[in-house]
Picture 1 (cartoon, rainbow, N blue to C red):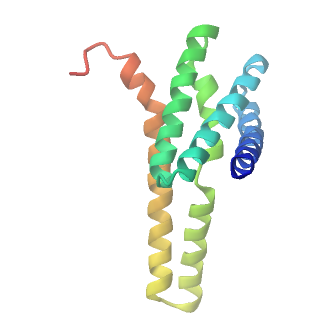
Picture 2 (picture 1 turned 135 degrees about the horizontal axis):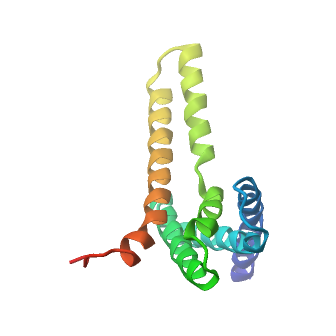
Length: 157
């Protein structure tokens, strides 16, 4: 029964992450044939992060793993459909953007401005800012990882 609940939660997470992926793909003028791949990439990335978080991996590392997975799949699709990898990957990364952490940091900053300095509010703001920055960095590194591994002219070692 617990596996069924986890599987339903995973499918729910993946389905609802497809919506912003397709929405931002439309904003970025992705070709119509590639929209379903952006949706699949967004679902796979967010689903991977969901599973890693369920296993106890911190959100920053889970985001790095999911972003790297989306980047690798995007490279595969780019070779298969003769398009640039960013067509498939950038919109698929959007559901993993840390909007909640940035919002909580901003609210803490407004509270500090309104009610004055307190150690708790300052700590909450710094914690959320750092979490948002590290998640955005993980998205950028994960997006760049396939290019660093597959498109190098010199060997890695």
